[in-house]
Length: 178
Image 1 (cartoon, one colour):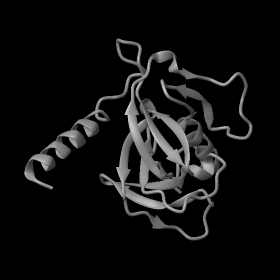
Image 2 (spheres, one colour; image 1 turned 135 degrees about the vertical axis):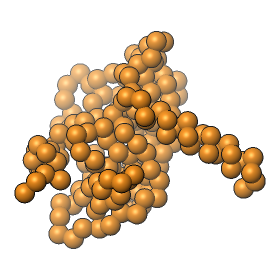
Image 3 (cartoon, one colour; image 1 turned 60 degrees about the vertical axis):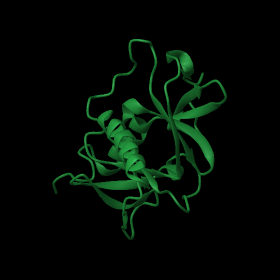
Image 4 (tube, rainbow, N blue to C red; image 1 turned 45 degrees about the horizontal axis):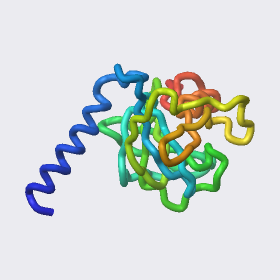
């Protein structure tokens, strides 16, 4: 990679990272929301950027033996240790063979979700995200769909998964005092 390409890559990375410094608004003045499109167990999904605290690729996850199947292990992110869960399993799919991407949820405590592929950042019109007419018992962490010009993707609600984890480990998260 030459110096110019490296500088461009750094500028893109810095701009992306900076978008997480300021609390994300639900929409901007144009009525648009930000989403990330991802692949989980080969299927397309979308995540609301407002529910994301950070995105990482290739972080070292240390496995933990004898814990819940959804938990892959723990990893360090900018000085904080976070449990990392397999997003595919939360969505009712088999555990991912390879999930190099990790999204950190906006939550009271650090928590990450691993998935196989980050596709792109999109900013469709505000009415592109629609909730289902009734609850989805098969995929309780999918809250509607995201419609774009070329596709319809299930919309994952990370906050709902974090709530489920809180019920399993307690309200103060996995780092609660004992």
